[in-house]
Structures are given as C-alpha cells and as structure tokens.
Length: 491
Image 1 (cartoon, one colour):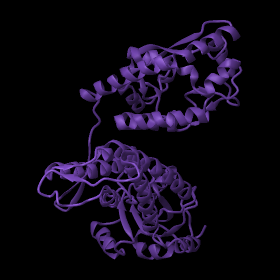
Image 2 (cartoon, helix red, strand yellow):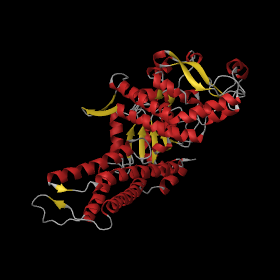
Image 3 (tube, helix red, strand yellow):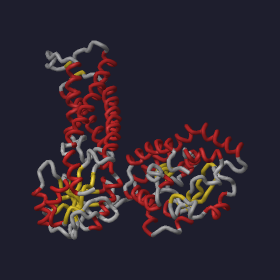
Image 4 (spheres, one colour):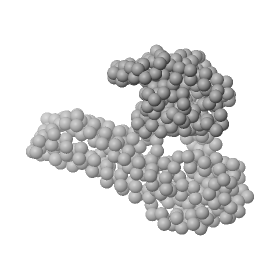
C-alpha cells in the first residue's frame, strides 16, 4: 500500500468519526435512560403519576413525577457527556468508560438526593431503588455492545485515529508493533517518518510506508492524511521543533501524542505533572504489601469458599466419571512454584493416564510440540484420557485448585503456576512473577492460553503483577467465563 493509497483512504474517512460515534452513544444513552425512568414510573406509580410533595412553603408548586422523569432523563444523559464518558480517548478499550458511566449515574442521583434533603421534598424512593440500578446496569451493557461494534470496525482500520509515527526506526517499529497488537485502542498507523527516510520505502517487515524524514513531517501529514502525530523518540527532534510542529497542527482535528519509552504500564500508575513547562511523567513503583495483599486474600477466601459450595455437585460427578473410566487416582498432585519461589502441591482432576510423566520425553519432538519453547504443550496429546479431553477443553480439570486458593497457596487470579523445570529456564526478569501468588486464571488464560508464545505469556504475567487491581480481577473473572465456554487454546 503506497502513501497515495493511504491518503485516499484517509480522505474517504475524513468525516469526524469522533463526533459520529459520540452522537451514537448519546442517542443510545438517552433511549436507555428513558426506558429505565419510564419503567420505574410505571412499576412504582402505575399508569397515573402523583405529584411531588413539598414539606416547606414551596407546597404551592405543582410538579408531577412525569416532569421529574423528563428532567432526570435529560440531566442524566447530559452528565454522562459532561464528565467525558463518550470521549474518543477512553472508548473502545480499558475500564475508564464503564467507571465514568457508573460515576455519572451516582452523581446525578446524589445531586437528586441533596436537592430533596435541602428543600425537604418527599421524593419517591422508586427512582433510587429501581431507576438507578436498572439504568446503570443497562447503560454499561449497551456500552459494552457498542464497544464490540466499534472493535469490529477498528479491526478494519475504521473509526480510528490515522497515525503518523515520527522518530528513530527502532522506536517507530516498536510502537507500530504495540499499536497493531491492540487495534481496539483505535490507532491505525498510516505512515512513518524516520531520520533517513525515503518516500515509497516501507518499514522493515511491515506494510507501513515511509512518508519522509523527520525534517519533513509537515509534508508527510499532508501526504498520508494523518490526523494524529505520534512522536516515538525525541533525539531526532529538538524541543523547539516539536513545539513548532504542535503549533502547525489544525486545532480540534489534528492531534500530537508523545510516546515515552514505557510499555506494559497500567494507567493508574501513571501521573503527568507539568513542572517549569516540562510534562513530567511519574510512574509509581508497584507495591504488594499491607491492605492491598489482605484485600486480595479476603476476596480469594470468600470467593473460593462460595464457589466450592456451588460447584460441589459438579466436583462429585467429575470424580465419579474419572473413577469409572480410567484406572488410577481421581486427583493429580503436582509440585509447582508459588509466591516468592516457595513450592506447593497443586491439585487437579487427573486428565491423563497414570504414567504421563514417564512418557513426556518420547513426546518432546520439534515436530509435535505446540505453544512455546519453555512450556511443553501439544494438541491431541495421546496421554490425555477421553474424559480428560472434555475436562481440559472447558478447564474443569482445574476446579480442585479452588482448595489451593482456600488454603492460601494460590489466588483466583494471578500468574500461571510454573513447574520447577520451567523456572530453571527463566531469565532473571521473569522471576518478578513470583511477587504474587499464582492463579487459577489470569491474563494468560483469557488471552489465548496454550496458543500463546512464551514471550506473550511472560509479558501478560508481568503486566498483571505490575498493575494489579481488584477491578482488574473482576474483569478477568468475567472474561474467563467467556474463554472457558469458547474452549480455544485449551489442550
């Protein structure tokens, strides 16, 4: 694809997709809110709505609940826009969009409660009991639906910022790979400017055209139709040059982004602070002590206990199937490496023949090994029993690990629990995964499982360790349910 082709594609999509998508969200938000408010009025008051009662000298006012519902719907929709829940910088990826939807909903009802208290209004509790939870949940679900729609379009390069990368060849290639890994973030690379760039060349091993050198960024912008310039390294551009470049951009339509040499850093750890005209980026060092660790342990203990009670009939049924179809013990115990490098016995339902470990050396051939070079995984493993194949497909063989979580050896969510022979092959930096307990599920489980390369497995585990949050754990649990039913990457 040439620079001219990129320019044509950019021109065809020149309409402001940001405003287009924001209008779609505004309309759907308003429809959802109206349905929630009307449903509340019908459920709480019936077909005929009463009037709001005042306990002060404002009792002469005649305000019907229908009027209140209309005002509430308009204000609720408006506040979601005011706090930025439809901003192009947060839609499509991350949890910020959902948090802002919940935050905006709580704010409008908090304001409603304050007004009712100050003016002594006998305001119906139905709005708080029905409209608030019903509307908030429905808004989040609809936003999730819009996100799936947006991600499908972004996978094709639509509804995305058209990005021109500027910097050294190494930094530009690194940034291009990371952006390509996450198309849902909405950054579609249409060209690059590198120090020795020659127009019509391509970046090595990519289809990204070189639009010129770093000295001719203005021409490259016009040639590619880019609306976002991402500076990946500043060694080739002086501060004055970057400032002049920012001044030359069209306000509101063209944007400047500076990408520091930081990867796999969670948003909550990053804080930007302007000091003496310098945009300093503060990156908090991750800590795994005090309340954070107790919070995770309390959640693990309560959740694993509840899940064991709920899954007890399934546990008994699986145990019977294994006992009746394959000779040997029901449970398989294996030594794994956990928190701070300590070893523990991990429990699983036995899904292989009893002499599986003795057969592994015969199976370790380059032609049959799947997954990656450190973890031994293969499809159609002949050691797996018929029942075991079903258990593995839906991760049911891992249910006994709930007892490991209850006991404190593992966590519900965390890095993958490795074998000692795998740990012996680790590079030094990979040992950081032992800063947290291993998990039954984790980012590796919801991102491809055994289909992942070793590098991707390590990157996901370290990202989780560096950026853990309780909200992130809930999201991984929800994604785990989808991954288990899909059954992809499990063998």
